[in-house]
Structures are given as C-alpha cells and as structure tokens.
Length: 291
Image (cartoon, rainbow, N blue to C red; front, side, top):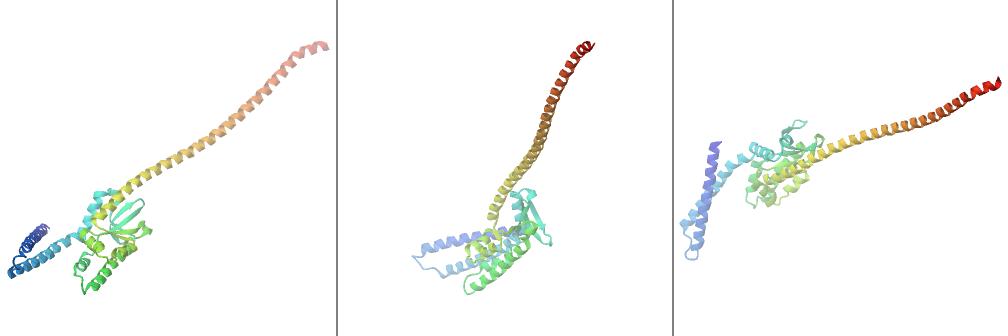
C-alpha cells in the first residue's frame, strides 16, 4: 500500500510538471507566433510532451481507480456515515431475509435506507472517456446497458418495503468527477432512468447533504418520540383522573344519600323521642284519674 501511494504521488507530480511545462511552451509559442513560424523541432517536442502527458494521465488513473471502487468505496461510505450519524442508526453489511447484503443502511424511525457502494467504475469509466464520433451511438448504448442493468439489480435487491426499507435506495458513487461526467455533463438519460427505478445516484458531496438531512430528521424523530412518550403519560394520567373522578362522584353520591338517610333517621328519632316523652308524662296522671 505504501509503494502504491509513492507511485501515485510520483505520477501526479509528474503530470503536474508536464502540464506546467506545456503551458510555458504554449505561452512562448503564442508570443513569437507573429515574428517567426513555429520550428519543426519545437512542434515535435510539443507532440512528445502531449503524448507523455496522456500516458501519465493514464498511469495516474490506473493508480486512482483501485482506490475508488470496491472495498475502498465501501470504506469511504462507512467513514462518511460514521462521521455524521450516531452509531445506533448505521447498519453495515445489512442482511435481508433472502440472504442478500447491502453495503450500508441508515435507520430512520422504524425503516431503513439502503445504500449501495459497488459502482461498476471499470466498466463505465472507459465509456465516458472515449472520444465522441462514429462510435458515439455504440458507446451510449453500452453505457446505458451496463448502468441500467446495475440500477435494476439495486432496485430488485435492496428496495424491500416488506422488510421495512423505504421505497427508494441510494447508489453511492465515490468520485465527484465521475458523477459529474455521468449525470451532469452527459445528457444521456441515466439519471432519469435511475430515478424512475427509485434509485438515487449520490456523490460524496450530495451524500453529505443527504446525511445532514437525515441527521436533522433523526433529531426531529427523537423529539417526536419524546413527545409521543409524553402524550402517552398524559393519556395514562387522564385515564387515572377519570377513574378517580368516577370513584369520587360515586363516593359523593353515597355520602349525600347517607346524609339524607341520617337526617331522615334523625327526624324519626326526634319524633319518636317526643312521643315517648309525652306518653311518659301522661302516664301517672291517667293512673290517678282511674283510681
């Protein structure tokens, strides 16, 4: 890996130096163009520099491609997810019931967003790099065939609402340059096709925006869940209060009835006591009269 990095740095440095040299020579040529014709030797050197520059660009891409596809793409995706989302919302190599695994998924509420990171760089990049011309129609046809087949595969494997996925999936492309050339620079309908299949292509920059949006949504979801718990507590309190109010009403009615019965009984007691006292008072007088 260290050797690869050394070669990569050397290739990039050489390409930059060649580009700078070409720029200097071009300025000199344009400055002297009015005075003298361009020497044949200088033209030859310019052609050689241009050839070397193309070779260095090819060499640079040869070193860059392995770092932006396959496992490296998955690693970059994992790093982005871990940098912006809490660990409990990240699912790496999530397995579905049919045994397929998606590179990553993000949990949002009770559902997940599937993210694929195995973009076929080696198959698509050469088609984007070819010169347009007689082979343009063939190039476009090959590009659509490879890309559309890959999108169909993602839609079939990773969009599974019955397993709590959203009705869309993200296609992660770990290269801003490739994303621009494939979907912005070329009006080839690839983006429209992907969106019709509910697959959203994202570059590192656009995924960054998606993750920010999801992070804000997760905060809102956490607040919503807290509000839901609070409402459930309020409903329980309301239910208990209604039960207490019912018992209180029944007890009050019973107390009022008891008070009324007490008053009635008290009235009867007073009347009975008065009658009894009257009878007791009249008792001796009646006995003397009879005697």
